[in-house]
Image (cartoon, rainbow, N blue to C red):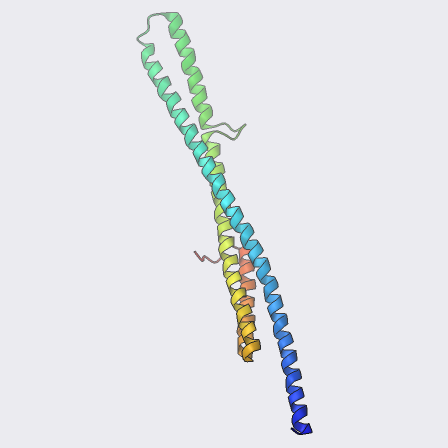
Length: 196
């Protein structure tokens, strides 16, 4: 090997080393974005599960209130029917007072704004929890797509080092940009693109 060939070999090795450093930097940056999207995705998934449980609990409470209200109303209606059969005025007055109390209780089961535990308030709270669950789930799906893009980008960038095919690095960079875009959509406009 002559001096000229030796210099060419050294220049080629130096160029390959510099190129590999750039690819390694690309891999590191994509891995950083992958960590962000995975963390955001896990948080969104946890939020979705939490809101789903909250909505389920609120709907169960709503059903219990509705059943109680129905029982109280049916009892009140039955008592109202038997009022006409009673002859004793004192008993009629007592039963009439009890019917009024049952009506107030049934009304309270329907709407209780001061505690937020009337069936109307429970239904509204359950719908809010469902909305929050759906929002978190939409975010989660975008973060998952972003994570997949980042992971594939890392694999392709790694393959660039092995194969020397620079086109793979460009595809890797494009996937990283797509991953950043899906992360941003998940953060700022999760309902803008419907994935699932």
